[in-house]
Length: 487
Image (cartoon, rainbow, N blue to C red):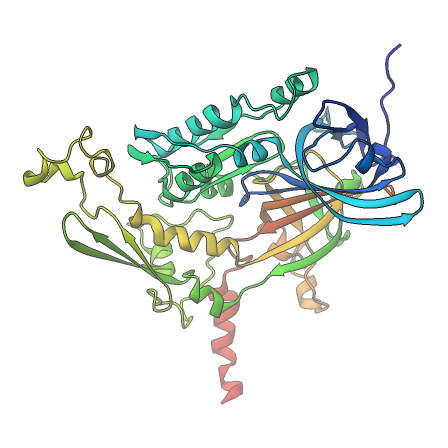
């Protein structure tokens, strides 16, 4: 007789497994003890984390006991079909690392939080790497470190019984984008994730001028990819969200309960002073070459990069700039933001300098032999990450296990205006972006299961690295025209 599929939390989520596995291999199904469960993904965080709030009437903390060395295996999905296919199950194993906020509710019931990290994250904390990597690209180093010390790690965390063998099989693979230039890297006691994140900071893309690699885990895999490639992706057509039904086609609204934005909280809005200090408008990069005894300075200006045809412009969600031609920051070249690097400032490798060619070889000085001129793109990288922090907000939508961080979504939000002129400009005229520039990058996700209320929400953190309209024509032009009013 087959085991029936458990429909949990009403029709919001289909959860077939939520098992706490102890250090001796025993297990306990805690689906019906969960008061609240949060699972978090973020493109600026190496791995997924989570917290379970437990209402325990079984005395598990003392009886199992729970000591912060357990595993939590969960399998769930959102009911229904997306794109004509059933939702994909999220099959995830976490390592429990701490118990917090333990409280007695009454004589037979207590409450506590179990804090969790991806199994790979726990392996990372227990692993150090002491290896020389010579003549490899940063992407090759990142992939090798991940495969050797995370994916293929023999660490099982306890006795080698069936449970732990199953856990090992649930480890994820890594997706990498190509980086340019051969490098050498020596690791001395660093964890695998520290090394991979170091590679992400130094790597230069083969396809984009910005050194904007990030290392993160999503629902399906780990990723060593560029922000630029994420921004170029087409919006996921399966998930197009709208706040309210204003101006949105009737065949979209209500088609799925996942379409509607239930809540919206603005997280970060433009801050000119902060953006100036973080180098978004302009910055200086100083490089010192200890071999050639020379110094090089690069002045970066946002508008120059965007308008100079010989310089590749930023890859953005939209083509509109965040700095106007009349802005006081239009000529900023880093008066409030400078960075200093020790780097090779020579256009080629050192061995191509006549008096060094017999002295610097791969077998005698592997670190100097392979050229590292990553300082050249550091200014652009600083701007790119500042742009992603310029305009962000969080929306709450019906729980959706199919979403992943790093995706681009279309989100239609009503313009906060009751002016008749705004309502007559077209079908989408009263929406941010006029129905055309409503793309956002998903930088963070929090899946929140509220067991006591039978609800499942997904909180989506999105970023916009450009503006919905041209600020030169729609903003500064009007400002200049109306200036006489104030004189």
